[in-house]
Image 1 (cartoon, one colour):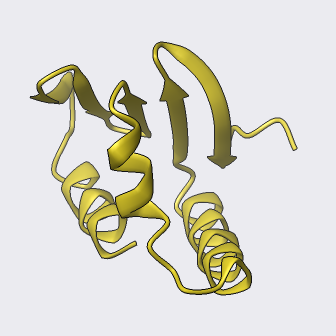
Image 2 (cartoon, rainbow, N blue to C red):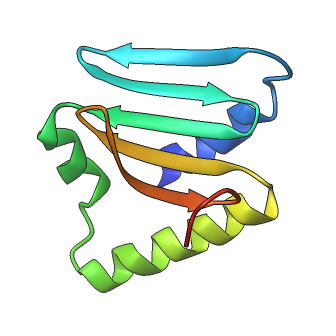
Length: 93
């Protein structure tokens, strides 16, 4: 979660265009209002969900979604190019 909060700070620096970070097949694409994480290596998901209890992880995601919404920003998580989760300002739910 700390990594995602740092990504939000970086978004404030982007005024035009985007930043793309590739790590092998995995990528993070950040534009002014969006973060898109495309995961091709399932081991990366394990790093994001290291929480001992799923309940704790869900609480953190909920707080992060609220922060994204407040900042009018959106996080999209893709698995092998297909959207699986969207939270924040432009989320569908």
